[in-house]
Image (cartoon, rainbow, N blue to C red; front, top):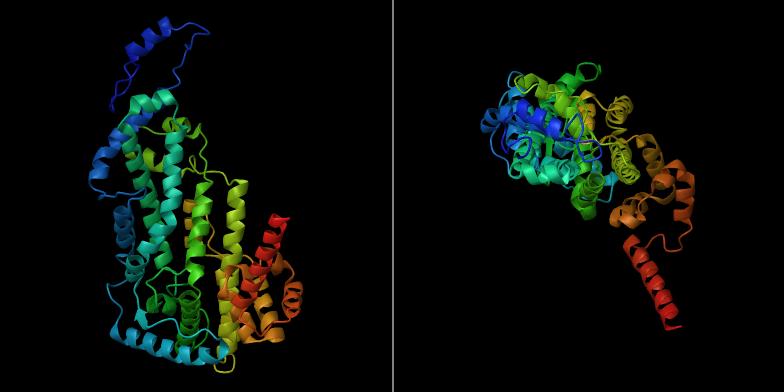
Length: 443
């Protein structure tokens, strides 16, 4: 009979002694059974049963019901359920003014059809669907990696227990995600503050309470700060609304990162040794210890570099466009730009928490380099040529271009069809390559 029966009971010490007596060197025996750790893992899972029954249901790799509960609970004493009416009017007026100022600074038309004043709870509510798209690939890969790490005999004996392992992982991920979302919700200023289109499409959303807290250390009028932040939000919305490939490319890069996740097979045994099944606190401590955090692979590093470059290009473009739009209208524009640059490039505690959880740093390290590139392209080739580069991902500057923006600007200037639609240029290049390939095939 197997050393431990299916279920959540601990192994019988007498059975273990019998197995020791029967074992012989060189015949798969020994002083320790290699599956003892998984027996301990079964004990741990039994302690999670009652916790799971109170954590809501989740059909995916992350328990988003639990994540939302935890986020809202942590925010309960900090913010109200809805923004005051005067805050909503201030946001609407600020976005309207910002849109008028942005019109001459970019060829991309307004992307937001509505302006909203959100509380931190609103931010959690309205951004959770996008977080699900971001987190699911990572969590799903982590979950499958756990199962792949189990020896064949353990898989066979575990049976339906593997579903419980999935629930445990979903709870652990959901718990940590909820805490990270609460921290982010207390810090972000807009729906696009971390460079991703987290909110509903065509909705410019600002968080007045967070903006008020942010304004305290700036020594600038509150009305000036909210208009500047509204301009950044409106610029982001223009980009995400009129560059259809951008949203999908960002999410696809996260999925590419997730596909490279690998889990150390020794991590499960190490996790089990850290847990006292009779003490639920040790379960949480073990899950937070980083034992199961995957190591970054070369393939993942490529995806991270691509994501970092794209985020930098988005933030750099917004920085330049907003700067041009408000420079002569807001006395403190330069100081506000520098403050937001530093804030965005360094990332706050909440972003660091999310980086630890998902493995992704959602901050553009090369923001200044990207802004310098967009500035150079704007000055040398004009607004239309600059904004036209967003027409297709193949036209966009690369990570190498950020290191040498002058060379990129010169290369762009060498095109004899600079005034043409960039897509037309790309199509002509693709057609020329196709004709060349056809001729090679015929030969």
